[in-house]
Length: 83
Image (cartoon, rainbow, N blue to C red):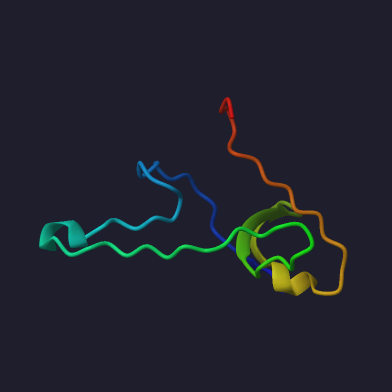
């Protein structure tokens, strides 16, 4: 099922989480970004993996592991922000 992961802190990169550094800026090639549609009420949620804290350990869980079960997903913009 879920496998344990090593938890740690990371410095902010100055951009959205997971955004990679743009190496194309030096070559002056156009940057192509993938645009995904937002999930709306009534649609099936896309499968994703996320870190979780369970029974004293940090683990990685996938939404697809809970197929057919009730799941509550909670999202927030971030700790200590005014959003």
